Amino acid sequence: MKNNDKKPTSIVVFGGTGDLAKRKLFPAFFNLFLEGWMPDDFELLSLGRTEHTQEEFRAYILENIKAFSRIKNFSEDKWNAFKEKIKFIRFDITQEESFIQLKNQLDYIDTNLGSRANRLFYLSVAPSFIEKVSNSLKKNGLAENVDQDRMIIEKPFGYDKESAVALNTMLAQTFKEEQIYRIDHYLGKENVQNILAFRFGNTIFEPLWNNKYIDSVQITVAETVGVEDRGGYYDGSGALRDMIQNHLMQILCMVAMEAPTEFESTEIRNRKVDVLKSVRRINPEDINHYTVRAQYTQGEVEGQHKRGYLQEPGVNPNSNTETYVAMKFYVDNERWNGVPFYMRTGKSMSEKASSVIISFKEAPCTTFKSTVNTLKPNKLTIDIQPEMDIKLSFMTKKPGLEMQLKPAEMVFDYFECSPDTPEAYETLLLDALDGDSTLFMRSDQVEEAWDVISNIQTAWEKGNVSKMYTYPAGSSGPEAADELLKRQGHYWFTNSQETLKSEENA
Image (cartoon, rainbow, N blue to C red; front, side, top):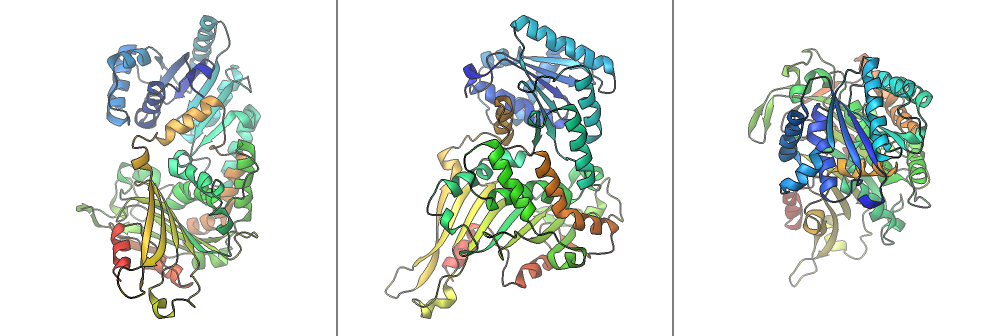
């Protein structure tokens, strides 16, 4: 709903001078403001420990908007109108006096409005501060209205199932579940959302979306960057926790879920939880059969020399933390019984690519017996980033006098249709402002996702169960990941046009 339908809102950003706020949050709020999605009456309170004057902080925000916003052309009048909504408050999370000051500021806003404004609290803080902030909000009565007050919490949501349950239990003692918005920015990406529209809005695909017609599913999130300056943080996390448990598992839910009876948050999130409960848990003795882990060594990425993971600043030279994971899951329900779901994610890879590839079963070869070796299974590719498109690969007749077949591709390109697509954080912040929790994770969903990887996580942390493979920076991963698929006659697909051209010319 556009701004004239929205109630007045006080937005409070804890960690307002941090990296996430400057790169994502403030540019997202500004873009929503420019396009008329923010409430007519809103205040943006940014909390930070460093002292700033209001003008200094607003100048800092403008600098970051110019650097990171997707909208580059805006008038000075628009900026002047937006900056008047921004207020910096020096704030110390550890001091109760800071929360009393925040309460006074929010009460002052309500008094000037003549009514109680909605309140949106964004906790862009370290996980260790979540309990302190939550308890202080509760103690000072800052978020007592279930219908009007919401809290966005950034991942990670714990570091294993036990800690996730403890975090959820603590939050449940402070707030109602409908007030808590656990954010995973991947769910805000346009083509992740489009999976639902594509599946349930088209009669030609949903009847084929099952084990009768689908041979396998691949979910890839590959990055060309290494750990960069996040070595200290990453070495305590790793690819399994940093990517598989949340981003890739959420994509799996979108691909595999049953049709919701309506497009409504509770119904959609119920169906996602159903998927996670159906994912077959990998027993400790089977971990090496279903998973591969690896670290990148020195190599070359996009023409630049790249040091190995163990040489990165902040990384323990004897680290047992994986930067690459490939694994196979099964969803044990009627729709997906027997279909392997392959996942892989890694840093310092040859290309940046996030995608879902649905590989359909081979066509019966009775008609084109002479060309059986050139028949390629149909593929449906949903590219999430950096491309945003949907590609359907199918067989056609090769031009000429003989009946020879070749693969061709139909492409729906989001950028061609809408070159200025909103960023993921814009979508998610707007939903939170509207009170729509569809794209946010519920407590049981978080806990089930942790449970799926629990045995693997425990075994890998012991360090003596699975071999740590290596792969050169700038490669597509370790050979062991290829072997994981070869056992069932599969191989990793690539999205590149070069591969399609080579198939066409084969």
